[in-house]
Length: 140
Image 1 (tube, rainbow, N blue to C red):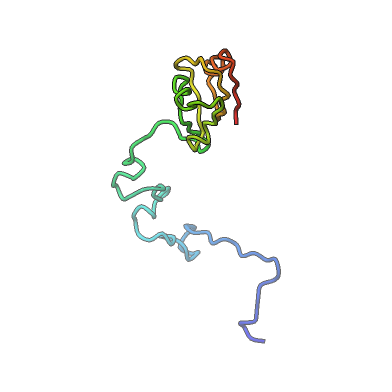
Image 2 (cartoon, rainbow, N blue to C red):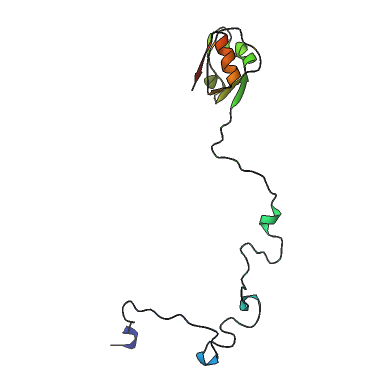
């Protein structure tokens, strides 16, 4: 058996070195903290983001209010007054296919021609005006 083969007893733990408990302990005087300076003092660690006295980046960046949701849906806006021009001679229009995106129909203007309008969303006034003109509304 060699001295290098000797291992501590199973599940035994070495006690933590207690520094600053007098010179007789071997860890007195500067107690492994060196001589003076920030790291030698209590609470002597620099905060996260400390840049040596330079204004930190989180204070240099402009502040933006609010937040932007990931799930925000953007619509292509179409008003009622534009529908007869878009439809032409047909009585049925699918605005999502026509504009290749999500379309919301708003109620500005009037409509006299009965149309079946297919879109992603309708305002309440647009829906009412289309139905009053004997048209129909379908939400995809």
